[in-house]
Amino acid sequence: MRILIQRVKRASVTIEGKERREIGQGMCVLIGVTHGDTEAKADWLAEKMTGLRIFADDEGKINLSLKDIDGEVLLVSQFSLYASCEKGRRPGFTNAAKPEEAEKLYDYFVSKVKTMGLKNIQTGEFGADMTVEIINDGPLTFIIDA
Image (cartoon, rainbow, N blue to C red):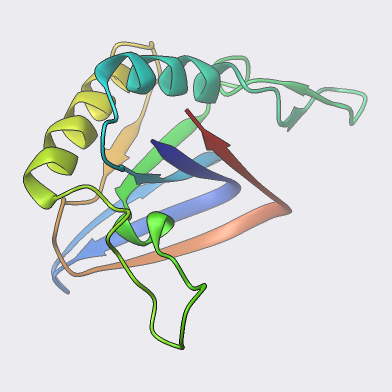
């Protein structure tokens, strides 16, 4: 599994041009699943993500976690995190897990994050056409592989 975390002032996802879900200060997290990923990897990533100290304390030092600031989270599936651009000009997606496998692990990851005691967790919809809007704070962006 691979997650891309963006520290945000706010973020939203619009699903199929209709439903809009949004968060305030916190993280927009894009989630990619590859072949052989496990629930154990999802557990590790959920713990790492919620404990990652990427928010400023009162002295302006990046020293606080999502939990410390009572931050919010937007979770969005993103199969293209496993795209390969090494050959030619068209990305290859064979490194991404098959949709049925990826959806199960994405749903598991979302359910795990929902047990972490955060106040507002919003999600995209797996496999849907989505538009994600973010106001990146910093900007700070991190990629974590499990």
